Image (tube, rainbow, N blue to C red):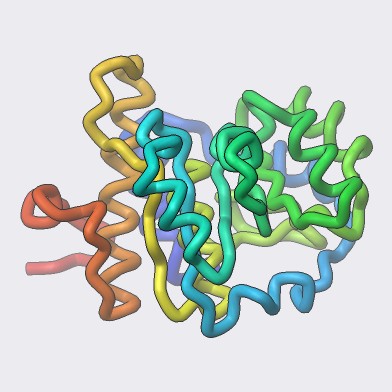
Length: 232
């Protein structure tokens, strides 16, 4: 996905949450000062692969989800899902994070040569300044939800989880399988619940684009709306 396609959805997210686009752009510019160009060839393993997109819900550690992650050709893990999978002996091939929970894991993965997509947005500039210099540069793909600039890229997506799916799609995944996803987790705060609603909406858009139906959306698909598409 290029930014022209993503921008209407991004503007809808900004409007719904009242986020400041200029703040995202400032974060992107800070990240651009620290980022180096990422070799996309490092993600060639995603092309034509069955990819497990791992969220950090408690269900991730169930036997069925762990088995599904093991059976996939590649695993893209959002945030703390990387820790949970590694504790179960599942290899994480790409971590996606906005640096808010476990940046030490991201640092360690890059040190081992595992790619990490590190995201800059309006309210994580201190984390961007602290952690990007600590990562191995050649294993770090720096992303933004605003317009890309310099070595900072945008492949679509809003939360770590749906951004992981958009990344896998962009780099040619043949099939996306979702493990560790719970859209209706009653333990999460209201703000997180709203973000999960948006994650579902964006995944609904992605499955339309791919011509693929994601079982994780069963029971929700009919209620999803995509106002940025100007549908009748």
